[in-house]
Length: 176
Image (cartoon, rainbow, N blue to C red; front, side, top):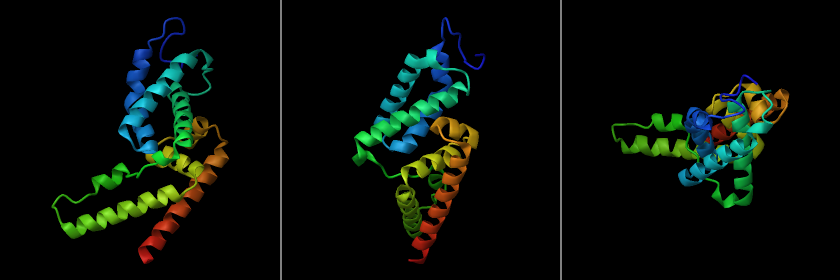
């Protein structure tokens, strides 16, 4: 139980929120794409964690447990409102945007971002979840397995399939 960042009798939940809030918000924002929804869902994840912290058994890091809660909150949100799926733009793609204002380069970058976004959302949801956890959030395979409640072999196979499909879709887009 020493993994829990606050005592069982008098939790310092504020410290736990402070330590995890930004990362959890970014994780949720990448899934739902809307800032207001991401803020609400982040609050919901923390609320569920607060209500359920007695059930935390210490088999994983508290942050991993929290991200598992967040995955379920996001899944529920998207299942209830599939029209809320967004256009996802990875942070790395935004960093590559040209600064000199070249209209042709801007157009090409926008086209590449749109192609990547479209390819990401053609992936099955379960493949995309694994890809976001590992490739975009930097979680290890073990952490991803814990967050998504999957065997590690399933994480590896879904990640491999997602990467292969994404690469194939982008190659096909380039040749079209």
